[in-house]
Image (cartoon, rainbow, N blue to C red; front, side, top):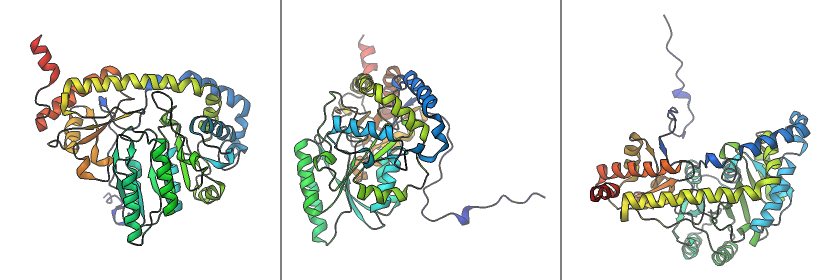
Length: 413
């Protein structure tokens, strides 16, 4: 007689996240995740780069670190040092850059360096879900700082820091996505950046700057990075190639002074991030990055316009949003009657995947009627059709919008 299958359940470590659902494919109308525009991935250029670099340096794959050391492939770090100086004002050397397996590994490494259960951090009230969930799992008290159309409100930062000081506490860091914020698409002004840095210095709190979306600005102009404005003093900076080239390559980076990198490096116990990806990116970006990014942002801007037009057509004034200044996301507010978690479940059954607002906010009540839509991945046609289906589901479930705009238009025709 066959024995019962081994039961791992009693052996599982405490505090694990819920089990993952089996992959069943993407929704027909997919507005979730940080996926990019498939038509804008520079496939031919990456093929040429892979061929050239492998012919020239393929034998170095026999060595962990490609003979460049534990910080990552040196030509890629040299490219980044030049790019960051040119675009973000950051003056750093290749030896102040650590290549990571996507920016998520950068988040984990910085958190591993600075945080312990019970610590407090300041973070934008609406922020990257990956950052929020990591803080929750580590038992961190995340104090949400409200945003407005110009990004993080500095008066709220000051109030939060002063409140902590009165209670004899100090935040371990201030986490911010100041340049094309996720999910709001705002850009923190240079004046606010100066105020933030001044506050951080006065309270002796470091700043953790996530710059993953900064390449995707419609007009190509950005304020200097926070790291640049303090020459790296009290600031740790992370970035990624996921949004500018391709997310599946899983290549990110940390910029920090050596006294910080020297403490982060022992925590990176993976024997190095993917070598081939680093080699190909360095070969491609040295020649084509400055041409590729404007082409990508033009395509993304056109998709954003399509999404905003579709929301106006199908939701009318029921969907409120501020036009983002770049990036791949639109943060949308629906009427108070709408619960976007429930909407997301009903919409997925109809083939539309959305990100409900509570997952992207420290204030779940504030996020209840908000949602994040990624416009980069779906085609123009899918954006138009998907928003129409979403409006139909929302009307059926919540009575919002009261009428479907395109149906009204056909009736009048």
